[in-house]
Length: 94
Image (cartoon, rainbow, N blue to C red; front, side, top):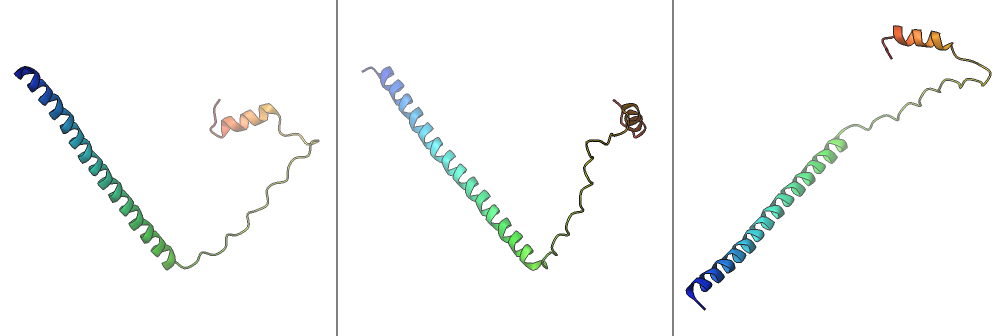
């Protein structure tokens, strides 16, 4: 094996070793970032739960108003021209 072949083999090995160590540091950075995000989510959840526990209970929601009665099949709406005129005067342009 010549000196040049040995240098190329060493360079290839060093390149692979460097890439592996870089992957380990990258994984450590991702793990640290994930832990920071998870810790922040837990902290915010605890704050939200504490705030909700401190608030007085909300009154029950009032029942919604009944909807307008549906038109019977025999009843007709306004004529198309009247409806279009109303839409245009109401600011809607088609």
